Length: 85
Image (cartoon, rainbow, N blue to C red):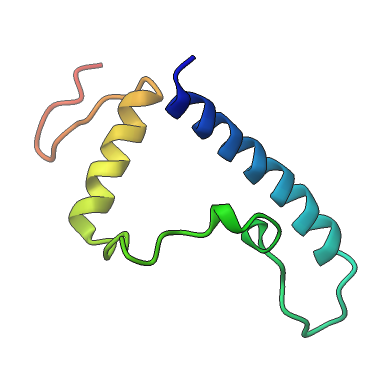
């Protein structure tokens, strides 16, 4: 296993543990208290502020929706095309 694959696997494990920890803390918080996030328990999960993800534009949303549709076994049908079924 490469070092990068190992580090990615460990980061995912930290995220899972952080979700569990945040859930346990959040269900016991008083109303109005700040909700905890996995990053609060694992600072290594904090997003790099130097590399912003960028705005989610309609074009990016469309690309992601098409990828999800194809990954789930669906197909892309454009307007005006016959369904063919």
